[in-house]
Image 1 (cartoon, one colour):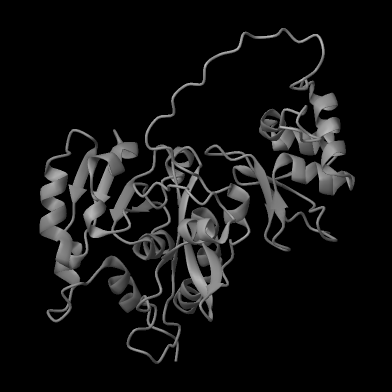
Image 2 (cartoon, one colour):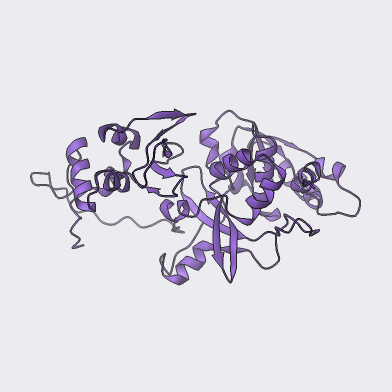
Length: 346
């Protein structure tokens, strides 16, 4: 590699605590729950709006006022108004990170390349996913007509919900699959009916489900031969953030989002589909208390599947959707119930 920046240990620089970097830059920090905020260097900020994230493998910043943010190096570049090389040099000097090719470093013996494990997955860079995060998407627009706006904003931030435009459709909803290590496995995109007069209001539109990993690989934004993990729970990244909370497991990300807004004291997760209730998918739930709430048409299937995994976690399967469903709605789910409990204002 003949890069100008190859002597900097980029991985270690971006792993420096972003809170410590902010302090080194002279930023005034304020607490915001378990996180910290400071003035955003990307815009003229009078009230701290830049959130510093150090949780579930995260080490980044994001401003919900201007939508900008990024890695530790991005933060230094913007704060000091310097280029990439100058930011790396400042971090290396300030925090004692030795250059990869610095002189006098002991030479290690050449080692044979380890054989990669199969399959080798491609994870979507966190910055690409963060750029999409906003409540300006079709599902959040629906939710804000039924629930408190601040609760919807909180849930969208927790689950990193975003917006994407494609095929002449604006404000499609982005559901990220982020694993327990904080890696973005893939980004699911769906469109929702936002017409309050429609009987399908807040329901998924037909033929509007896409996976951005595959799309971005075709567009050249990711490696063309990329392979993405499909067995990842929606909301899995919250398991480390809330290690002692009660969990609720549902089928669709939409159901999880509805549940999180209505019952925020519970951590809501989703398999993504009826047939993804597998041991490999549920492995991160080991040892936890989990309420399983299948859609009405999946209760027998999920009850049988969970019965074979009782050694994994303390599961309790609920027939709530069967009890609450009108007779003519075989596919009734928790979101249908909560939507009925929060009718639209006249």
